[in-house]
Length: 371
Image (cartoon, rainbow, N blue to C red):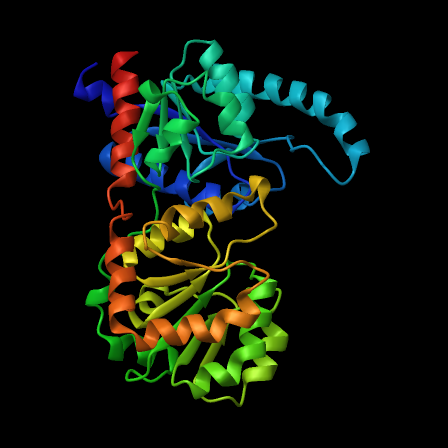
């Protein structure tokens, strides 16, 4: 296949449900578009999920299918699953027939199942991207149908066929230059003090209840130990927290932080959940981090993600049940022990994969070439 043909590649991308799937999908699409401006890219998502809103916001077209996972709490709801699956297969068959993709990409989430399965059965090469250190259900099922599996961790060889694996890292926003931003500029942006060590709290866009409770409970101890706090509360928790800290000096609470480049530039210690995409961004930003895995995720994959870093000395792992009692000790130890801080920063840099999106697109183009 010549370069002129490659400029017009046609790719279907599927998956989503959460930001952990949606943003990698967008990063891959943006990189295809950057390298091959005349490409046709179309998305397939799950009706009612965030991808149906996010993809059009970023200038992409998307078709929704009626698909959902197994409901462990309401078994009756699962009776409709076979019908949803059949309906989804029929719809993606039509999408494939009309769009005529040269390759299909799945990023995890239930929506990628029908598309990848149906496309690969028709001889269209498939690639899946797994963000976590433990594979999700959909990607485990799809692994045998695709030709390439792009992963973030070498340990994934324990779960996927070695001959299909490419260790590319996760495609995320590039924060590798944040430490070049002057601290004064970042501090001024948030109305904080450039001279004080800063604890950045990021519990995800929706927020993390236990982390927020731990910070509230230990707020004055943290401040009395000399640090200031930049706090992404999540939209569900913002109003009561805003009210509580409105007159407290050295605390900036926001529902969502748009300028994460400034937030990372200012941060000395980061308190975060252990989602795969958060970890990939923190590695690029090269930050000393305390990871508190969410106990409310499938296959407890956040704990597995955090353990990969913790065993390499690249993060401090604290259980969700223990963060309230150990928060102050962990934060102040990192702030006061220069060697510990530098050790964490140095170790997490090894997990940074700034070229992940480029490497995934390279694998995708190879698939199209071979086919």
